[in-house]
Image 1 (tube, rainbow, N blue to C red):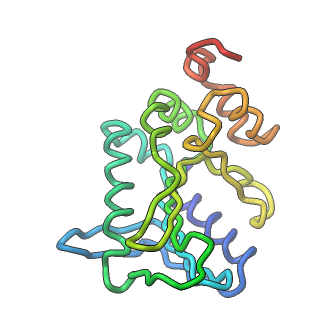
Image 2 (spheres, one colour):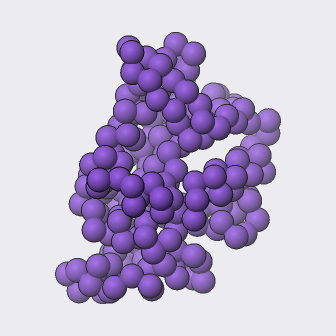
Length: 199
């Protein structure tokens, strides 16, 4: 599955579930001489501004990477420098109770991506969910996209850096039955999905 297909589904999702979201594809940033591009940038009002900064990884990106370290380096660079760019700066707000930024690293639900994440689960699982952009709380999520064939409003994620580690019974129970992700997990060797045979 290509990243432009993923981006299309993500854009359709935000348009379906939020009123008047500001959506930009291939959004550039430049901070402290560090330049980069994020796959999808969405600004929503809930009613406060919340930025969703999204990196998408399909089969080609996973195959082309030297490993999980390279993927995470790109993700961390985005997290560190995106809002440091003055054009994307976040300002603290009194009374804010929700995160002002969400950094998402989303994988396609394909056998290639499942195998990649499974074999690097310890690295992806160490991404701490809680973060900050200066004084603004943020959330980090590493996940597989689900619901790609359903109504755009039903697009979802199954996280690999939350309380249910990849391959655990809790993780597998969160995977929707009949989904592309469920099928991809079935197509990857059981010893890769559950190397400790804990199921």
